[in-house]
Length: 310
Ligand code: ASP
Image (cartoon, rainbow, N blue to C red; front, side, top):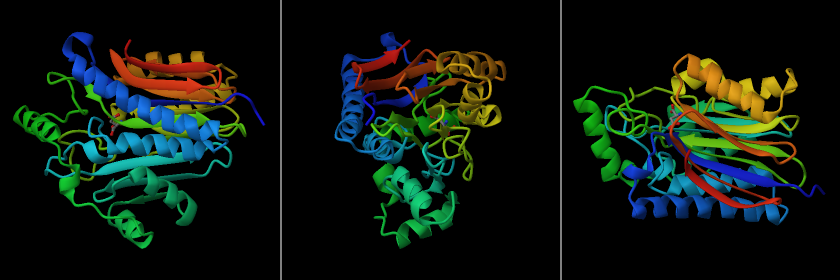
């Protein structure tokens, strides 16, 4: 069994400045990140799989109202929640994704079941909801996803006629999507990402998060990646697959590949955000072109790391 294993998570990137963060809020974010990374790490440490570790870590972040995924999802322009998620297994290159789900407590769990039981990769909207019901998923009503904070964000966005990436531009530019990447003791990689999308987005809008290759990718030969940021740009840049391709075909290492894609290619078309990555040797890397990214990592070779600012 391989000795090296590890996990990294994110809770979104963006304009996150220490001077704008209260110590209470900062503590809450750090505690939530620590709970998620520890849960994922414990699974890996007990010889669990990377797939189970990323799913568990993302579930914990989905249940935390601080992040724009699951419980804390942002509002669409018609005052609803539409969530997207995806997961990928680096060993088999199997993947599952859902989008536009409205009643599923943990969209990442549904993405995994789509991968394992639907015979498809991607289910959306009513079809995804019907499949969730068939698979025995508990249905939450929209009130479960309601938070005053997100509702106020929607009102601000509507007043200024903007589509806001979680807390964006004038209001506070932050992308609150969540994600996890892991390498287990069997040398298998996995990646998972989940989001509520963008505040005041048109209903039916789908971002990069559920798109395999854009927001999520894992391949045992190279790397596992989860993205957060301005989804439209990540889709056009095919960010996660882009980094994997530089490593596989261009024979570049993780750090150089991630830097090139996030700081040069993505930035050159106007994309804001970042990625978390772990390669097949358990090297963990964070790359973001924003002022901050909620992030954490732990591996068999390194102690717990939690970061928010650059
Ligand atoms: N990438 C997400 C989306 O465009 C937003 C985020 O990262 O917060 O839906």
